[in-house]
Image (cartoon, rainbow, N blue to C red; front, side):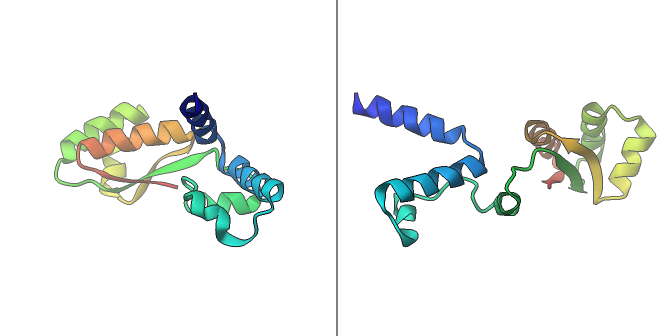
Length: 130
């Protein structure tokens, strides 16, 4: 029974944003009187380092830019996949590939950015999400 409660708590924590996680840590410190780095003994928070700049602003980043960093050995496959994810014509997609690093898509959700990155990296391209 205790394990199911623990699993439920873990699943709830996984669904929190970085801002919500920071608030949770603060509330736990206040509730249990913990000071200093002792809270970190429970384990590192996921993605805390990656989202630190957004956390400093008090909001989580919701729009991302996907950038093609390098094409790799399979230029034709990357070109085909790039056209599929961007709906660009052959010339426009070729221009993006020829002028790397270049922005593929701007202001996309985290999920869409991850999908684009996965598809392009699957065919050998190197992609960056910011």
